[in-house]
Amino acid sequence: MSTQELLQVSGRQTQMMEVRVLQNSPKQAKWIFAGVWVCALAFISMLQPVQQAISAGVQTIRGTVDTELPAAAALADNTANPTVPGVAAFLMCYDGATWDRCQGGLTDTDDGTVSGSQVPSLSLPLNYVYDGTNWVRQRLTSGVEDAAETAGGALQMMGSVRRDTLANSAGTSGENATVNTTAEGAVWMTPAASTNGGASGYRYISAGATEDEHAIKASAGTLYSITATNTNAAVRYIKCEDDTAANTAPGTDTPELGLAIPGATTGAGITFSFPVGWSFTNALTCWLVTGAADSDVAEVAANEIMVFYSYK
Image (cartoon, rainbow, N blue to C red):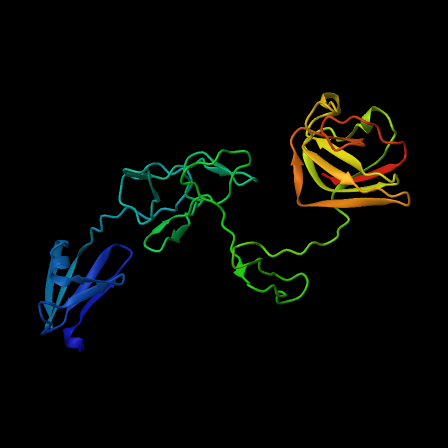
């Protein structure tokens, strides 16, 4: 663009402007002020009063600029509602129907909860996730302890790697690893000994009285194994019931569990394991007798039967 096509503007703090239209400048010439292009003719028509002087082929127009903006003022807290145009931006908050000025008073706490009204200084972002079709707001993905399940509620999902043949995970101790599942969806696990956890144990030696009734546990639990030895030449029997000792009546009640213990004077016995445990809901009480019938109450001899239970 040549100098003959320019519209020159110089601004002053007194809000007086000098506009010089160079000779042979076209009517559609534009002038620039504060980085914004504006039609020169429209701007000139806003200058009142207008003084014109023509000199040496240059037209000079002078006048007072009405910007419709208030005098400059510093922003401050607790500023009253604006009643005039302002250069500063006013943050607006949506209440679901209309846009209102954001209010103060919102506070956050150490535990992450938020209370009060909306406040410009605290931002509450919403996370969105893609469901394959749309972007939707992310819902709570963790449950609340002892809370009832609700239809359509979100659950925390855990991913795994399918491994039809168990293999070592990559990396070394202390690094992140994957959970491995079989083709049927079962989790690969390897039992490992630990100083914590494990089953509890209970040992009993026959006394030869009151059917040798004995309580292993007085509340609900799980029985994992029974190991019993017998030094009598004849077979002996161990029977168990899902009940407390006070409510158990050998020979009258029907036991939930019964096992034969092989006999030998040099010692014989059995070990019976429950692969996933045998659960009892009330308590676990067992007794020892010489006969297989549920009604048998014949006593075994003292010290001839030794039993060990592993339970939890």
